[in-house]
Image (cartoon, rainbow, N blue to C red):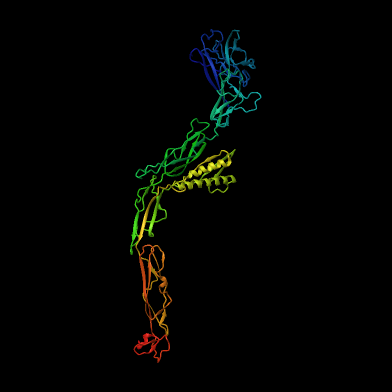
Length: 624
């Protein structure tokens, strides 16, 4: 139907576009141009060419250049059609058949379709002139423009001799170089080709000869235009990954000292914390100012003890680094006694007295706000028994600090470093033994001299002695590090006072018989043997006492005469001078009956004064 004539309403002078669709198995759209111009109508009586006239506009033929070519070849099936013609009779004759109309006269048009086939047209507009002739020989001609458009985009390829693949549309993955936030990369410059002509391409700011690409994603884009203004681009991405972790360096060891605010009288304000300050530096290959964070910030107030401070830093790529600080809050101030007896204490003990408390435990305070441990040098308590005499009571107040004492001598020779401990060392060479031998000799001399002068010797003197001995032993410079710490906590100046115990108690006698010892005289004898447990005594100091005149006193197991024999043991205390005595009697009874005799023949017999009889026991006289 697009060959049929149509009436187009009056148009503005110029060229307009019509879209014509032909439906077959596919849909093909053709864009046709038609021109509205003045004076295109022919005179009556001659064939009228409607190429571009206002009544039946003939659109220009618009085609695309053949693929890969800058021209268009008119082939069969894609032909330039003849313009429709009309004679003055008004009959429409687009062809000889295929229409329901009858034509009175014929008109021929040249060139024919067959004549136009095989002609090549260049890019741009080519005017094809058609001539219409009726059978009377009258002719008319018009021009149909053939417009060849370049619709093919430029193409990208690698330069000749390049073996690397074309990067267009790809992602190049790189890694940062050491201590840099960039990666160097170069590539073959892509070449743009076109079926017609390529204008100068637009190159990116990163040259192909090599560029240090920053970490992250960088877009590299090449753009090019051909002569028909068709644009094409080659775009690829440079993905640089940061593989280097950040660094962080801090003070490896930090020691803070607890302030002493209580004063020498112990009445100030104590504090249980000290400020801990340290320094850290973080750096990263991709950051000018790398930040970090610590679990215990610098400037924190911490109590006495040891701490592990961990500082972390993370870069933008997610890499993390850490540093651990050994922090310690030290208490180097001794406690202070608030009370201590200033005068000697005297305690007198009488018989029957109990041993009660003679003093109160002194009180002490510490700058750390924790009560110090107050102890007596011999663990004596106020109510404990104390022997008579003078006793020095010494109290010390110790806080809870605990440290270690060691001396370190570090010998540096070339790349080797040797550490020697002054004590508890298991591997010390011969030269070290010489050092320690000299050190001990000099140290003992200084210690004895200091003691003689009444001075207290500080352990750091021994450290210095070791360093001097080390130097003279090897006659070469060495690094001598002096360390001094306390084995126990800080101790306050001692609280010392005298306690004098005066004992007025008598000795204590052991095994003294509680009643008289009664025995019977031996048969036909006037004596009997008496025994008892050994008698002794102790004073209040626990001294074992010997009875006075022990050599003249009767002894257990000896013979006693019939009758009452008094016995007394006396003991005197070596402490108080008081005496104690043990008194009892040994009574020997005569239980034998008298036997009358005519004469006394035994000198051991007794003569009764009244009867004159002789008996073995004078108590038998008179039957008594």
